[in-house]
Image 1 (cartoon, rainbow, N blue to C red):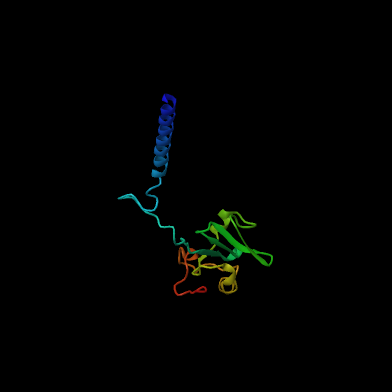
Image 2: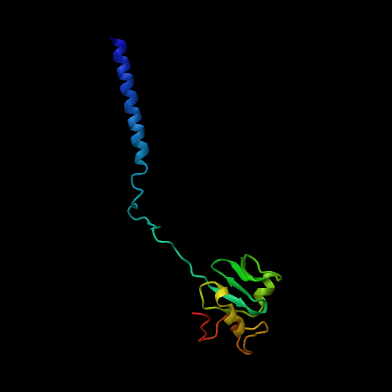
Length: 143
C-alpha cells in the first residue's frame, strides 16, 4: 500500500511539475499581440513602399536610383539594373553632368523623351553652378 501511495505522489508531482513548466513556457508569448505600455508598436499590416528617384547622366544614358542603390541602363534591347554602371567608373559618372528626374517608375517608360530633351552632349547652362545636378523648374519628365 505504501508503494502505491509513493507512486501516486510521484505521478502527481510529475504532473504538477509538467503543468508548471508548460504554464511558464506559454506565458512567454502572452503579450505578442499588443505592445508593452510606453513601447513602440510597429504595424506590419501595410507594406512600406519607397518611391524610386532617379538621376539621369546623359553622357552615358544611365540612370541612378538612390533608393535602390542601382544603376539602370540599356544593354542591347533590354533594360538592366546593376549596382555599378557599365563601361565607366562610378567616380567619372558622378562627375559628369546630371539631371534629377521627376518620374518614380521605370526609366524605360520615359527614356525616349528624356534622351530627346537631354542628348549625350548635354551640358548645364553656363554660369549656373549646380544646374547639372538639379532639374530645371517646370520640367515634367513623365509625371
